[in-house]
Image 1 (cartoon, rainbow, N blue to C red):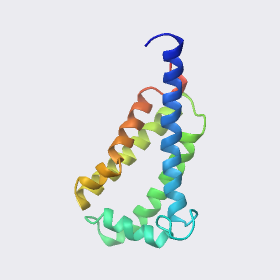
Image 2 (cartoon, one colour):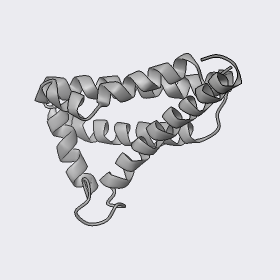
Image 3 (cartoon, rainbow, N blue to C red):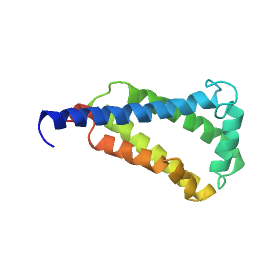
Length: 142
């Protein structure tokens, strides 16, 4: 497919990827602070810290609070950056950082739980989508 219809599809596909990734990051933040309501997701930051310890079972226990807060800051920042209409270099950096964060998370999951979990939860798929988004930010779509 070429022409205006192809360009419109490219723009909408990139926008969809950006919004889906940004919303997913922010949904994780809402879960760890109990904003989805009782019994939904982690429910509390303490529960998220326990999960962080499980995912990073190979890390010393003293690093877990730092990792949990670093993930929270990164996911909040990247979620917002992906939802904002960033252009050019800023959009590319947000997408590359998202791809990297998701890849590291997927690898940590694979080390701690085996390959099934990151594959079942589409962590590597999301990382790949972010990498494609970095390859061609929406502002550079034809």
